[in-house]
Amino acid sequence: MNKILFGATNNQSTDSILIISGVARSGKTTLGNILGSCIAVEHVEEPKPFVHLPILSAFGSINEPLSVNIFKSYIYDLWYERLIMRNVNFRPMDESSIWKQKTIMEIIYRTLRLNDRKMVQRYLDNRNSSLVLTLTHTIPFCDFFWKALPQSKILHVVREGVQVAMDVTSKGWLANEQLIEPQHASPYRLYLRKKDGTKFHLPFWVENGYEERYLNMSLFSRGIYYWRRLLEMYEDVMKLSMQTDLMHVVNFENILDNPHKTLYNLIDTLGFKPSRITKKLISKINRKTDEYVVKSMSIDVDIEELVAARRMYSKFNMSTDRIDDLINSFS
Image 1 (cartoon, helix red, strand yellow):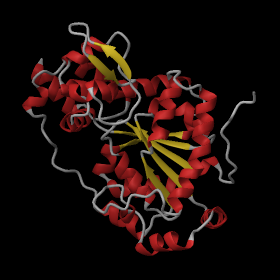
Image 2 (cartoon, rainbow, N blue to C red):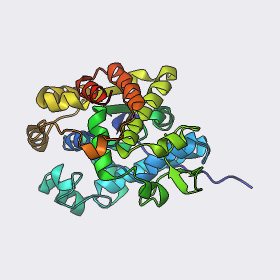
Image 3 (cartoon, helix red, strand yellow):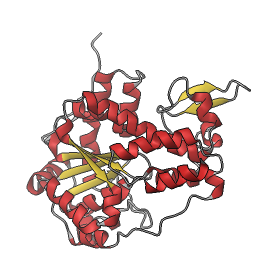
């Protein structure tokens, strides 16, 4: 019996697709919205199948050739749906709302005038359009993206680890309640805690043999570990990758400190053209007063995790002042 495969005909070059990745709460959505406000650029925030396929492929849940074919076949349908306004967030209060990225006139035009694939293709060709995908957690799987989309660029957004851990802690994403009964669809592996047999759904980045220690950590320490592990996994992959010229690391701290220079340089490097909305979004960026690690988050800090995380600060050229203060306060 012949195999059923995925395939779709398209005329778009893969170098017109840009992927933004990194850990949660690293500034990816902010950057994606700014790039998505540029002329002839579309930004899609975390389409779940595109987040999950690289992970499932890497761990053998779906074989890689099939995963790659599904990814590259559906991505152009995603682009098409975006352009004709079928797959768009119209909620005005959401950060990824289309109203914050495109003008009312463009939204109305695309909603009423783009009616079939031929019209969409002409629209793409005439505007030399680009697609930006924000895909959280997937930075260790950049080689998967290059197999599916050769010559596509990847932006790895990095942010100071203590702030990421604080944000993740306040969201409760790594709390036991979420690990026992996940509220969001996501790849996981089952693990039975030794002391009582409780079943946990652990993320892919928790190392084998590290489960008990991870489950004994405070929420803040879990956040630090999460940040460190994804950066380490990314480093391991890039050491062996042949596509390093397509990877660009963006330090979100630089965006906060000097948004105008950092973002316009990036936009120019990518070959995008800013719109009036782009300029407005950039003008709104400012560094809020640094939050302090509240006692409830840090009282059970794992010092070894902080020290291990500090090594990643140095590798990614981030100031260690904040994590040093935290290490010293608990030493």
